[in-house]
Image (cartoon, rainbow, N blue to C red; front, side, top):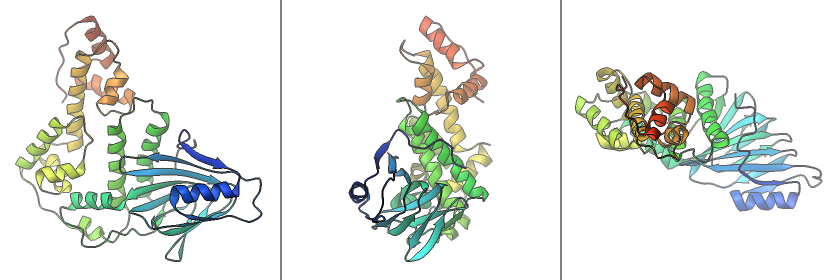
Length: 333
């Protein structure tokens, strides 16, 4: 289930109890037609918004029933209920959004939001999803990507997707200004891969088919690319472009020839990079700022991984650096 706290609470874009103001806000921000009961009084409706590297998140809540007629756009929409319920009409066909199921719909849809309905809405650009799919499979998409609209929230794949989404929400809502875009970009990438690999859509056959096995030279090229781009998000498209082969095959090759994943290799190299930064740190730098700058979004986890790899804590290395000392440490396994 989603975190109990109200998500995106620091990113509110409007909150109103006036029907005319509500419809004007929805028209301006979403280009949608809004219908509310003519007798609507004493209500509160609001929305919060956050722009992700390749998409956006909305949190909406309403104490009165609202109907939204949304126009077409270059994205797919996922609605995840937090309280109450609603119905989404896709080409006139109703899909309930409630505690038992979520909905994936194209941009053009009619949303009926019941009184007391709260939802988290994820918009993911269609072209970005297609690029992810091409990177995963190594073949072009033969037709437009379309998801099955109904998602059972009790299935393991839905729970795994929600777990990644919760990590994104935690970084948005609880991180300081030091939170790096790199972390959100990698989490969003994992979220989109989860959508493609775990949810039903009309291009599943591409993912379910076998792909060619790469040679060891592709693995070496991936390692070289990761080393040269430690300050950039771990990017599936770039891996596919560098090697000329699907990322599924690259993951299998790493497992077979290295015994770990490309992401594990990137994590090891980021630990080494973090150690160098700690050794050469300025007096105003902290373990937190260096951890975030190297792509670690959980300082406690970073400290544990660092201590396991080097035999001492990052704070001890930083303290010695500030004193002008020298560190001798073993390489990560």
